Length: 336
Ligand SMILES: [Mn+2]
Image 1 (cartoon, rainbow, N blue to C red):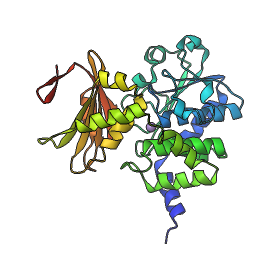
Image 2: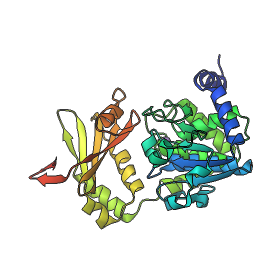
Image 3: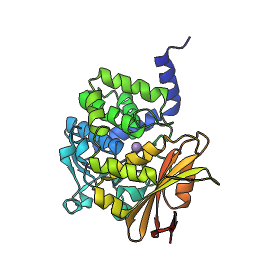
């Protein structure tokens, strides 16, 4: 009989590119000055991944700059090194870096550095760690594993391959990414590997109760009120069997709700039984609408629809932005 740990090892060995992880590590060690970056409106997985790289580069006494185009939500301040992340682009002289590491980005556009990366110095090297399906191939070394639950799970294998000892800081970051990207192991992306790594992180000192307290039990009264209002507006499109609801700019402003709280609303609605998928349409500005898609059945890939609409994401959770205005006519919402 195969022991669970052996089975895990065997599956992973077939899947991950060990040579690529080693080459990546060598590049990081050789770099003189590294720029670390994540996607906009950063989530738990992106922020944790960034903090893992900061931990690594600091331990190796490397020079780096950690950049996030948007501010880090306060709820993640328990993670190590978040105070070192800057969102001030003016502070960055892009030519200073010989290495760029993009984390959890999916596409070049999500780095917020399209112009800078596209016109980069020819000797500048780009490494990416990600678990989104491929959209564009902009990296020199791409550590992309869409079958893994989080970018921190990719980084776990990177650390293991390079025999970097996992300390409490790494453990807290790896577990945070796993928990937030799987909705605390509720989403279909959850695997035996992910759960096994999570339990290993507890042994390394990750603080599970603190992570849950900070990332889950953090909803404001405004968020709860907006959820209530939005849930009561849910309708089901019978033709496609998709549940749809709408969040207006007015709803958000009135209740002072954060992006993260809106994201968790989509995740909560995906608990709805008997529909194929859910769609939350959110008014971003007078002429821009964001759509969040969640698949609730295993045979549906919502990222396909998101890509048709110019967006992207995962098989079970994806999003897009379109131009238009949400208007209500009688009892129906229309995009004009
Ligand atoms: Mn992620």
